[in-house]
Image (cartoon, rainbow, N blue to C red):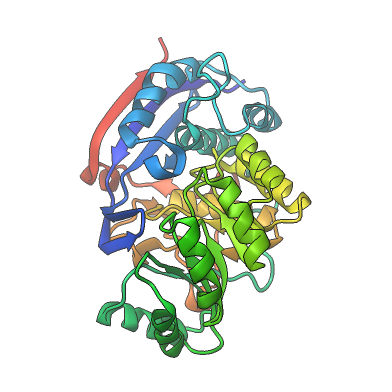
Length: 386
């Protein structure tokens, strides 16, 4: 029976090719954590997460501390008789550590995501299993990734719009802020082309009064959904947006656990969710949230954290293959955003947003170059079974 023999936690800052900005943040590197799990037969698996305070309430330092002090020591020496046992354990955890390890109300979704992925990868490799069964990840025919445009409008972003149009992208998500108005959307529409489907991501940048005024105005310029227009806890206001505007309101920062999804559904505070693996506690929990949201009549966007490496991109492909009812997807940016991706193969969307191909005989299907990782590492903590 395979046993966890060693674990290493890495704090990593993967540099971007340029600054990425939106209403809640501006960043030039990933601020990631990577988790390496080694079994007693030498099999190694990798997990990744990108903690964001405004998304899950976790800083990277806090997530690392939680893992070092409360989670990783308890994982050492753990055994599973088969791969179904791993999946069953993660399903029972449901995106968070066991309650006797970490109190359930402690922010931990990103930290647990790294654990979830590393366990699926290591034990999946050992048992020759992929996270959601064979064959490996192959999203549905016609599946396409959206382009994403950071906030603001300058010559560089106009060039990006023209590139998205020329490369045959079908959909584009716009990061907008409190200054974005109908004229800005009309200009973007001119550069992107009439056929491009446009969505807006406000990243909590409006208050209720602004949202009630701006959503209809921007919708008239072709925006068909509005992601997280209000602060994460303003469910009553979000419900008013749904009922009074008749427009699609997508929950993002408002969602990361089963309980938060239940509150959104009960309040009628959204018509769609943005399911991101790093914020929802890993692959197993994110698939559960997608299914629960769909059963409640919501539509699904599978998103990503800005700066994901091909480790999380591989997880993204597995999720989208397992849940084909995805209306929009964002991910697999690879070196379109990162100056260096430590994982191989490089999982980067192709022309028109077509997903990359990933051959996978077990685990997630990617390898991590430790030398590349070390070049961008700001801290690491090893744990070995005694």
